[in-house]
Amino acid sequence: MMEADASRLSPALLGAEVDTFTIDSRELQAGEVFFALSQPEYKNNCFNGDFADSTRHVATALEKGAAAAVVRPDRFAEHEAHLKKFADRLIFADDVIVAFQKLAHGVYEEWNKPVVGVTGSAGKTTAKELTAHVLASSGRRVLRNIKNYNNGLGLPITVLNLAKDASYDVAVLEMGMSTPHNEIARLCRITPPDVAVELNVLPVHVEHLGSIEGVRRAKAELVEGLKPGGTAVLNADDPRVLSMRELHDGKNITYGIDSEADVRAENIRFDRFGETHFTLKTPAGEASALLPLNGRHNILNALAAAAVGHSFGMTAHQIAASLHKVAPPPQRGEVLYFTDGFTVINDTYNSNPDALLSMVKTAVEGGHTAKRLVIVAGEMRELGDDAERIHFETGRKIAEAGIDRLFGIEGFARHLLEGARSAGLAEVDFYENSEIAGEKFIDEIQAGDLVLIKGSRGVRTEKVIEKLLEKFELEK
Image (cartoon, rainbow, N blue to C red):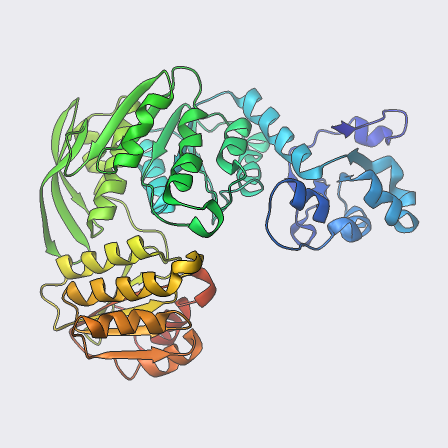
């Protein structure tokens, strides 16, 4: 709980109208309320790792013009020498993160408009962006997470924008998790979704969740957190997702390619890399669609967005017209055409075995005109005790997909190459890190290549892209 003793607080603060809040003193603007986070809050709210105590920045924040600061009483006692003179601008909370989340929930309740929650083991950000794009094309003003703001701090930061501007018609919120501590359930308590979009259940974060069934249980919290009578949008091609239809009392809308579903893609064809044609079928009719993205995974993301659009009353033609105008988020399937005659798929934001193999399949399907198919794959993180075997098997499957060359970057990527060699791919090379890869790979690339670059965040495979952009020019 927050303690705000009116007799202690400044009269100016009591009469102030505050609509902006921050947890980062470096970005603080005058008039904002600064929430000072410290290790106890992070630990209590199941954030992994050690974090700096931002109570030491409270005095500076208040001197810079913060309207007030929220601090823990014990942290105040520790820093009392510096903070005592600001006592009339301090609000005390036993848990500052919980206070921050409760504030966001209160702002959400006052706003009181629809929330679409999006989760899945892969594709969350793309599906969130596609969904927001589709809904915006119908004239709605859409609030969405920026960057990777999909956790117990990022989501409230997003929602608190509504305190300053409540004119948004709908919020599309990506909800992530990486631990067995009910992260998605906690997010649903901040903003209970009217529509829950479940993309997939894959063996990601099994190191923390124990098994793929543990992943499923964690992802299912989004459906369980639906408002009474809410709508679940479920991937019918993923049995673990489809099984979630029994977890709530509202409506289900299914989508898929291979399975019977309410929203489907048929007659799929790839005429040129970066373009996917299909027939979009919905309960409200069908329409020809051109999606400026490649790959089955992106078709599924588009179908999820289409299912949400349908739930909001959009027609198949309206949805198809909207999908034609989408663009991938940076580093997530972004297609770069270079004047030297090669094409690069920049998918460097993150990686896991299923996502990597899906992108390889995308490159193979859409790269039939390329002279060479080249994969640059960074080590995949958080795979637990089976990491070596998983990399080996993934490398074998990459080779079997029919590529021409494979480069591995860092750590377990060596086993990726071993797996590829076991399947008969001789053209493989290993780089110790992405800095070295960026410097050397620019000499390997050739005109006519289609190159996929993908890796976990910690490997920083975007450095390879940066080196390419330094040496080569993009098509206008």
